[in-house]
Amino acid sequence: MSTRRQFLAQAAAGVTAKPARLIIDTHLEVWTHDPRFPFRHPENPAAQPAVDAPIENQVAQMRDFGLRYAVLINPRVYGWDNSYIDYSLHRYPSQFVAHGLLEPENPKIVDNLRYWVKERGFQGMRFSPIYHPQSTWLNSPAHYPLWREAEKLGAVFNFYILPQQMPMLEDMAGRFPGVKIVVDHLGKPDLRAANPWLEFRKMFRLRRFPQVWISASEPYELSLGGFPYRDTWPFFKAVYEEFGGSKLIWGTGYPRPRWELPMDKELEFVDSVLDFYTPRDRDRILGTNALEIWKFPEAKA
Image (cartoon, rainbow, N blue to C red; front, side):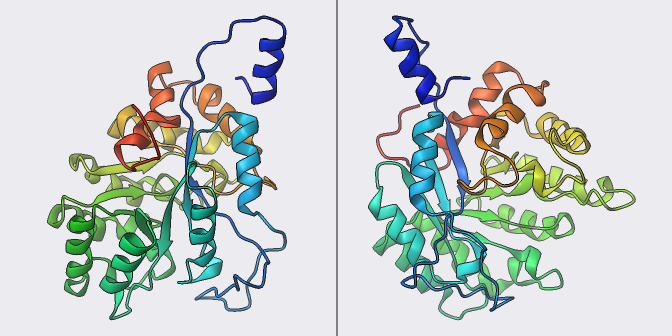
């Protein structure tokens, strides 16, 4: 795998390099301790990251490893304030698209969606029912206007969700086929459970919806061990077999400092650790599938 430095070294030596493949990080959370962007974690108000992971770190990583685009996701620590993602999007408009967070039971949720999409140029929103395991707001009739507005706006919804909550998402996918949906973290199988597959298989019912994609990434979020995360392989393979290579995407979670999985290992996990992917599907997962979901600046399939 060629990094930017390797590419320049090859060019200097007169080596003809293959055209760089399209690599898109579809889940990138950035944050800073800059007081202009205060932390407001909705479940834990005192929570804040120990170190910064600012947008500039991601720009550097994208340069060093040949990533063309990334999808910025507002981290939970900012709560419903999408200001830092907004700042980052407009500082580097040629490299990013953005998703914010919306308070799910705010009576002005439709207006808030419209504002961030139409006024600030966001392309979608992330919802995290995983933090509300007993709640049913995800597919409540009160959310129907939100999904109808998302269809009108062409907004994308991505979900951090528990396996047992998948039937609610299935319900909304059936009701609102015009909303593109991304399921984060491989659907979050619980590897600590006696039988993780019992609940995990509920996600497979989403394969009948053409507007649904699965983020087959961030194995450290699932594994009970370290790299190469062998305990996650059966779940990655099952999702690949169920949904196919055209319905999977890849994301890292955050830029440097990569205290869990450095970027070279992130790419190695897809390129060689998960050896059941075909070469064509690796290219799809790492890049071209994302073009079916988001409108990137000057993106060409």
